Image (tube, rainbow, N blue to C red; front, top):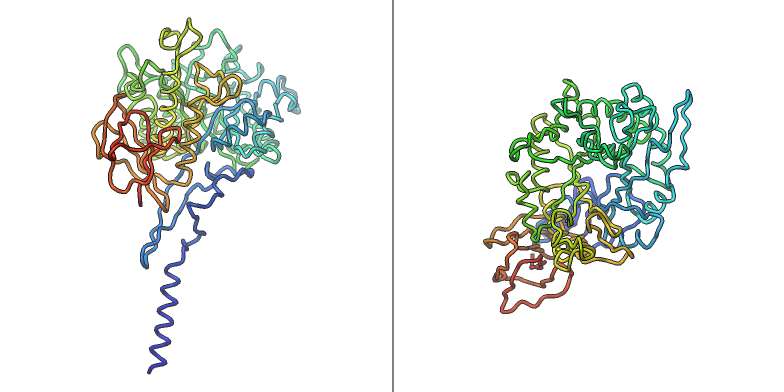
Length: 504
């Protein structure tokens, strides 16, 4: 009998040890303290910024396995300097892993059409693509500009492709994907066009515009149906050439919210996505793309309130989150759930609209703008992350930038926005989003978790200073640049972002 009890105790002990092991069914456990998230090896298209798309972390309690799961946001930037290691290093030092790039021009590669297509790959900056890949960056190749022989609207390379040329475009995309999906380029993301919901009439001064221009004001869905016709040809060709490729809708401008239109606007261009989904009455347009891309910028007017109070999108939460809400609503009507990619975002300073604030006559904006831009880095990425956006890309990395929006200055030196981004990605790099905390009036707080701590990211959305008493369990407090803050009697005054580390 004694032997039976002893054998039972040994079996019980073995069972308890097995229960305590960090095993998740079907996959290995990933420690949040593992430095592998900073790997710069050439990653595949489904890998996340921190190399793990769906992180699962194990938190130990007595005899309990409690997985902490979540999806990390993809952090990107528009980059044009892949051949310069100074810039690629700046990108990877800030944990940027997506590089949106414009080096693929159909017009330049196939300027004329012959019976057997001739592609001038020498007109692609292949060294740029190689440099981005070798630095560990994943390139999103924006495909732009139809050659003259393929233009539906003659004279407009930015416009739609002629129906008679759609097969040729599919053939071209097959060749491009076959060539550039392999080493040393490793391109697996293809964004077809840029702001296609912009109409031709918006670019009469530039038929080779960098944005647009598939928009058709005479169509109730603003040309989205014809864009879907193109995708229906192109998508199978891309997937046949590279089954792992991801096809991204050209980033939608979304000028205003058609369900809450501002005075004097019908916001018709915003129906473009619905036109894509309807696909000329077949309602199968979602079968021909993988990710929905959109753009959202606030223009600085002296405060950051302009983001959430932008007239065109106020009813839905502002120019960034409001657009995401609208796109999800449209997709939901058709039973579609595709990832959202905020492919262009930043804080701009428009010297035409705000000549004094933005220094039209004094050489540019002052320090207040660049400090606000550093605040906005946190606003942008953290809110997108908390709202389930697949990825967010800052426009742009290199200086001087469009309307002063770059992360680096003209000499390649970090601006405050870069320093803010670098600390944010380092601080939250091993974390997953948990919840929004509503403990304090006038303070926005987003909670992230690792296996060893909670991190509250907080700021004042009303652009005012608010003193708060910190909760129990504070480990450290940092400002947006990573400077250690020593609270006065456990109190801090919040306006710009703070990171508060707390016990689990």
